[in-house]
Length: 221
Image 1 (cartoon, rainbow, N blue to C red):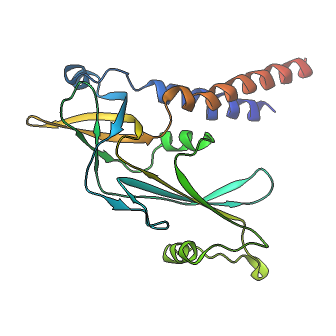
Image 2 (image 1 turned 180 degrees about the horizontal axis):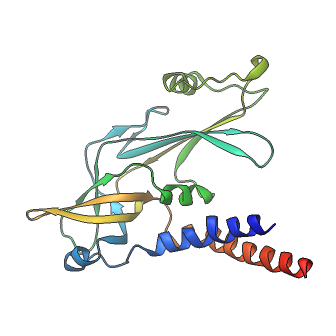
Image 3 (image 1 turned 90 degrees about the horizontal axis):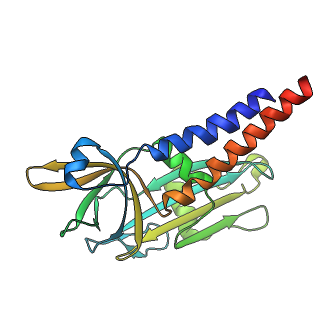
């Protein structure tokens, strides 16, 4: 029980809280040089269009997540795939849109996955008695994910395709960079949720972990 309480309190809770608060809210260029990690709220700006791979929706940015249910409360992420082209956002106090480049998956993206919120998305589900449509199956095959499990039965899969368009809100955790007079953002996390929402599950896990730890101590003594 002590190991479980420590994992909840620190592994999921406190560690996530500290990671999210490591990003300062100010993004003034002069402060960005002194405190490179920042958190800011902006909106997607007009740019070259992408096309979402399953729904073929025109958008600025997309992401596809494939999960498999293994038991009632256990899900495994099989794929977290996103568009790789840089995009631009409107961000105060900059008068011109800023280019955003996403880094490789980080701990912050694992924190985001704890939240249940889903942006504008297409969701496709498969289970024993329900199959996926041909476009989804083609996407899975392209990424070497079979819809069939052991004994030739359909796997319990959920495929979520999210996409974002001009004017949609965006919440950024990253570093401000500049080359000459041109500023751009190197992002650790591009989220659909504000920091306050991302903090809810870690705070809850910290409280639960603390309660479990105290209960374990009381029962031991």
